[in-house]
Length: 196
Picture 1 (cartoon, rainbow, N blue to C red):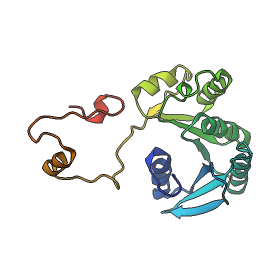
Picture 2 (picture 1 turned 60 degrees about the vertical axis):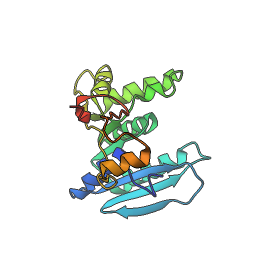
Picture 3 (picture 1 turned 180 degrees about the vertical axis):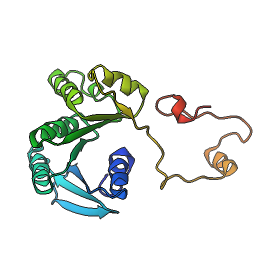
Picture 4 (picture 1 turned 30 degrees about the horizontal axis):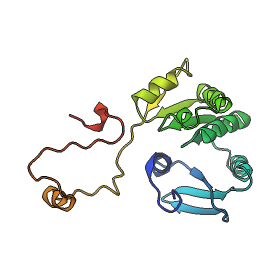
């Protein structure tokens, strides 16, 4: 879905690097059986690699080929433990710098898969830069990084999708009171969310 409808930090962090003049390739794993596709999004080249039957080997080989052909300075792993581990592994193999980005505590997804958690923690420790979505993740990651604390890159609304609408008509459509104060809550409750 990220290939056809770009959204979130996986897209916007690389996109804005490309907007600043950096050459950036974003390689996505497609869980459907399809051909490799490459599109340009304002200077950001997005590749999608199908790998449902090869356990990610096709994806891994594609990324290795990109690294060999382009000789980048950095490689980043976004969205899951596997990508972070792969990014750090390939960075060390090709002697380039690595970045790992976390928007969630991935260890909580599969708590019983301890060997994966050990590889993940090792990748976080070895990564040149780690970015996280908030303070609680930063605190968690600091357990694995004795030096070089993680940097917070907070989540934000997509400016292209955000539409300001008339309060009264919205409340009418949703069957909400016109006069009462309403509080919405979604996700973490932190000062950075504008709770004041």
